[in-house]
Image 1: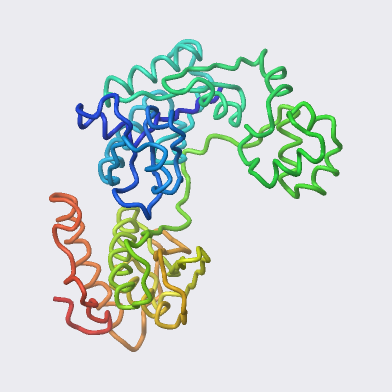
Image 2 (image 1 turned 60 degrees about the horizontal axis):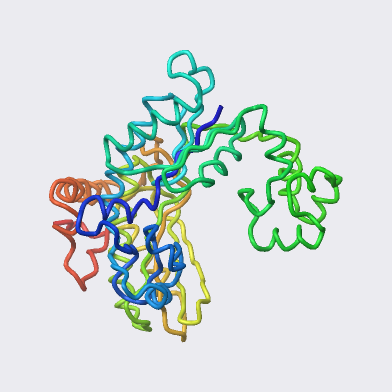
Length: 394
């Protein structure tokens, strides 16, 4: 049996827990200005049609009495770690899939923990007692059904789909509820006369593949009760990124570089926390007309030094010619490897040792941020960090 735990309106719920004055109010997390998007909305706000990823200006129109708050990622991550620790007490097989949801495989745990419904109730109680937050739990023999089940009775729900109920549940399940069926796939299925997984089972797999590609194979398997995905406790990090919608559109590259510097510090800090080094840096630019471009380049030396990440990103920005104003800029690192992986050092320069000096400075800054909070110490605003090639990291 697979358990899917999904926190209820997580960011908004954390804000309400930390500030009792927000109880019963329409809490909308995502920023206090109109250019951002909604990160989370309390269930009171959802009654007005406010949803995650909605433009903030639209949320304000729908819910004028809403309380609009800027996100506090550090606080959300702190609570998330506590939740994952709680879940690990129920099964060694825990797969976090985002900051507020995870899968558990509780197969074989019935003697110790009781039947699946009892396990779900214990999880909900433990999360509530430790964090003061509610979660919705879905339990089923198949991973994709567990996720669907957790959404059926939100908030604070508990739904168990037994092995005996699985076939009938799948047969009547609307395809729009299947993870992976987005707008485009949904429209194709509708044109084919398919509205439930039971309808899918009546189609030849080759026909589904012709219309939906490789996803047609998975959809056909799900319709017959086959889900090959398993709970994977270790999820390798493929990339790390940071981005921000600007308060006002701009063509000023110097201003954009200031934002890149902040993103580089954030990305570098994430890499060092996960003990990873990157081979590639990329930048993301979204223009005022919402067109989006990315540019990437290899790092001169594999690493997680914030100054090196910034310099590579700034060079990419300098090389990118644009006329339309920019509304969003971001920086990321990819092609990641464990920091213990051996790295080929330069034979003729001291570049490696200079990078090591910068990384020591980053480590010291990380410790200060961890103790006193983000931005308690940072590089001079409006100034580029010295080139990593300069033997002057002071």
